[in-house]
Image (cartoon, rainbow, N blue to C red; front, side, top):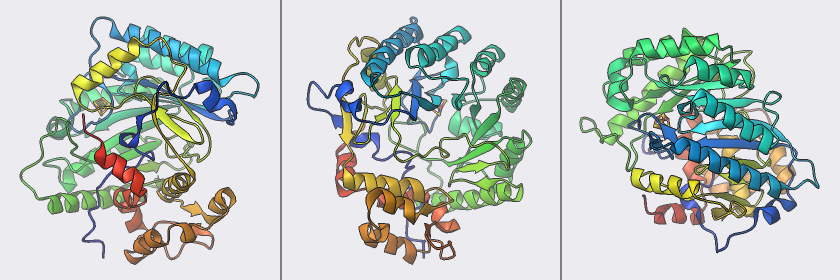
Amino acid sequence: MTGHVRPYRSYVYAYPHKTAYRPLPEPGPALRDLWRDERKDALSLYLHIPFCEVRCGFCNLFTRIGAPDELTGRYLDALDRQATAVRDALGDTAPVRFANAAFGGGTPTFLEAAELERLCDIAEKRMGADLRAIPLSVEASPATATADRLAVLAERGTTRLSLGVQSFVDEEARAAVRPQRRADVDAALARIRDARIPVLNIDLIYGIDGQTPASWRTSLDAALAWQPEELYLYPLYVRPLTGLARRTAVTDRDWDEQRLSLYRQGRDHLLAHGYEQVSMRMFRRPGAPAQGPDDHACQTDGMIGLGCGARSYTSTLHYSFDYAVDMGHIRAIIDAYTGTEDFTRAVHGRYVDGDEARRRHLLQSLLQARGMPLADYRDRFGAEPYDDFPAELAAFAARGWLDDDAPDGLLRLSPEGLAHSDALGPELFSAEVRAAMAAYAVK
Ligand code: SF4
């Protein structure tokens, strides 16, 4: 039944996607007004570091290669100014508390040890986040996960370190990712384990040119040897303006089949090793503390994003700075950010009204392996998802994507539904968001 549906349309990690954001009417709403009536006692804090040593072939994240002329210092200066302005806008009339924090990128460990100290200071002293008391997740690459940087992160309270390995097979790394030697990757993993950060996550990618079931198994087993608390298995995507040349050897259909089959292999391998599936991409070792991004897909809490690629969410507005994939545009946006003095307003974003909030809730909970309690939806919206999304849910059921054996009151994907998360998610986008995404000129 599922043969005609392209399984890999897009990775829905946030809805609406940033390409649906637009410049807000000038001068843009004041943050102080936006946050005045919001609940602020369980906020998420995200600090974005848009630097990497190299640009991975598949990457469409907001990041640039290298940081010439002390750009990291100027970037941290701007982050400091932004944090000061945002914390001021949150006010002190209602309690302001951060429930979790994350440093993402880019590659946060591109920053040197002293710069990472400063980054933690910004989160703690400017924003008031108690980093040692809350989950703190940090992304790293093998080359930048140096002992001194890891020591700073561990000491400042990092509870989860996520390492982008992608493949333990050197030829595959060269083909899709970036040249890296397995020995260097293993050395980085040893340093991370030595730093005693409680949760190690390893990212792997499937669907690389030349990757076979046997070589995929090699990567899976090499990762499992480190007994990571979490593993993320990502399908490879080739996206506009990224470095990866579109493969010529296989058709789209064959590539879809290759990825689906490697997905099933990877999933079954991890399940056989006792891992629990949390979402299509995420697997957790039994007994490991819940720490990953898919664990706090909390539907209603606000998010404060700092840095030029970070998003922030109130209950009605999602906002960020301008977005780009192309290197020239990214550089210009970073330069504009480092020169910004006034961070008191939201300049770019999208209002998430009642209908969009329902879509977002359904999307984010349905894409979790544990499913969506109907009561949660009912309590929040006073409605039934089957009444709000009859056509979509009927189509999913007809394709065998819904789990008929789910307990009463739980809307849950079947294993094939979960395998098709990247097809199912986009089908829940509203017509308005689709139109905005389609009209977005890639840059
Ligand atoms: S995948 Fe990660 S490390 Fe690679 S370029 Fe993108 S942000 Fe940087």
